Image (cartoon, rainbow, N blue to C red; front, top):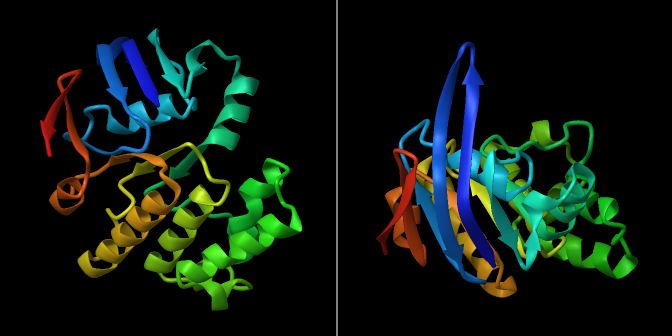
Amino acid sequence: MITIRNLGKHYTEGETQRLIFTELNLDIARGRFVALLGQSGSGKSTLLNLLAGIDQPDTGEIVIAGQTITALPEVERTRFRRRQIGFVFQFFNLIPTLTVAENLLLPLELNRLATPEQRERALELLDNVGLGDRRDSFPEWLSGGEQQRLAMARAVVHRPLLLLADEPTGNLDAATGGRILDLLLNLHQQAGTTIVMVTHSREVAARADRVLLLDAGRIREIGP
């Protein structure tokens, strides 16, 4: 599903350059659940943004499902991300002026997939995450756990090949975080979606197929 070859990335901070990683190499098979660990500032979120095509590397290439996304122009990267990738952010990134149902259906609308059948299936997904009775509510009326459940449902509603998650349980209490993880894994098992999740949680890492550590610009396998 994912091939990373000789990936390099740095940021310019004032007059200095901050190296994030160099010559990073990694292969991830289709359908795997990968937990990505590392200290703050090690480049975990940067790697997710590169996988999503939001950022571009300085060197190297990323191939996802046979498509070299690092070779695509920005418009094509955006189109590929919209169709093939779901992204769960730590802070939800829900659109406050849209209802729960409208937030959920947005990926289908953007991909021109909002047929009556797809809309019905999407609303069934809303029931599956326990928000069927909140479809006309706005995000600000939801609890943190409810907002995260909506964010996850929105990330998978268009059945992406790859799901990227950046600390999706990091701002939730342990009980709510556990329920969110159970929900994510159920969705993963049903659809066979490949997942790469940034986390600091040992509980999350314990349930992953692979556990990777990003440290000092290098990535290595440490589990399960």
